[in-house]
Image (cartoon, rainbow over all chains, first blue to last red; front, top):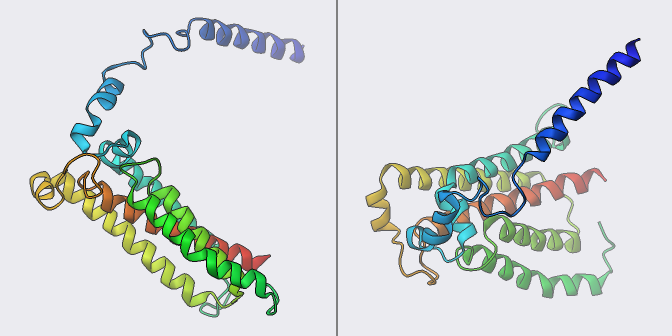
Length: 94
Length: 137
């Protein structure tokens, strides 16, 4: 009885997920919601607004510079964690 | 890590290290012109430091790690200060760091110093990772 219930629930979940996937916009079609004003502004005005020829660098260090700040902080905190686990200098009595 | 009499490896690393270092600095400084930037350039700089460490075979790393963590902290604070200055005082920042002509090396406003700060952080952190994990092995 339990297995049948689990199977029915999984089948219902499968139907819901597959119907959602079939409703998704087609890959690469120009009417996708990802092709909005943001990407056209990045491609068209990035060199003018940031002064950088490399559009990717213009995005990650000018439009989204605080996101890159978070990434650098994540790397720094990872170094702190590795030091706290692996360092065995004579400074502390571990 | 290696024997003291491995002279071929030592000399080859001595010749290669400055070129790798220069290449990493080039990638970091041209981040706003060509593909690359602080993350990839910092990784290349760290690889040159790691090659130097492997070939010279010194083992003491306590004060070195302290110095590298200090450099990384200062670079991270500099990144935050530069970006905060650009956010809260945009006019002043544009006078100090002008946008210039797109395509020049000194252009792009605050992007070049931010790239350099990210490069310092990534290089120091990668070197620290290698020091600690290589010691464990």
